[in-house]
Length: 238
Ligand SMILES: NC(=O)c1ccc[n+]([C@@H]2O[C@H](COP(=O)([O-])OP(=O)(O)OC[C@H]3O[C@@H](n4cnc5c(N)ncnc54)[C@H](OP(=O)(O)O)[C@@H]3O)[C@@H](O)[C@H]2O)c1
Image 1 (spheres, helix red, strand yellow):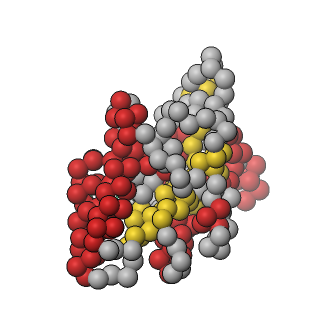
Image 2 (cartoon, protein in one colour):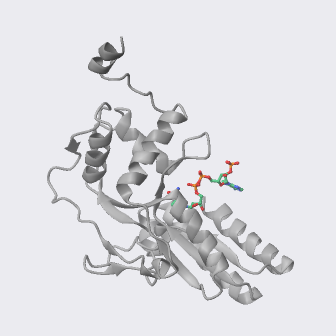
């Protein structure tokens, strides 16, 4: 995971330098930003934050480690070769899928709808709509003054909130009702700022809509059975 991320990133910057492209927009991740056990609860997470590489290594969080190292490598290589690099750091991406397969961020939601997750974790996660991530890439590419990193996030929710929102929209699925950790206090959402990106113009899609559209897309692509209409409505139609 780490090697292709770093080498692949460097290759792209080298190719961009050779082709004299105007600007490279690199898709990093919140994983390169938040993984720092020493960050206090009152710190507002923004573009100045970096994940702690030693912490990522010791927790074997190779995705976050790889994204942080790849982002640093992109930045160093771009500086050395005079490439104009701008970085987007999306949080977990939701919304309609283009691909036919299930990726990691979709599993994050799907497991709550299939009955495979019997409980939800005592943890928080930030979310953003895929269209907003796409728009962010276009905006930082087209805005001459854009530079550095851009945190791309709409809101941070506890898993319990996610399950609650989904269950209100789609009560027919077997959502977990209990947290896996009933001992520790409920994890609190961290504070973050998406101001830098919002200064370029976009409004973020509310997380409830992101969750709704994700489930509809899972149904439309055949990953999730569409439950039959309630008995009453069948009788009325008959
Ligand atoms: N999804 C999220 O929630 C999220 C959040 C933050 C950042 N990101 C970042 O956004 C980017 C896309 O993520 P995604 O969720 O859309 O991932 P995805 O659905 O798993 O798609 C990954 C894509 O990368 C290609 N790929 C994987 N390994 C490759 C390799 N060694 N060489 C060339 N291509 C390779 C895959 O090709 P094949 O289709 O041929 O396998 C696939 O098209 C990643 O950089 C990810 O870190 C994603």
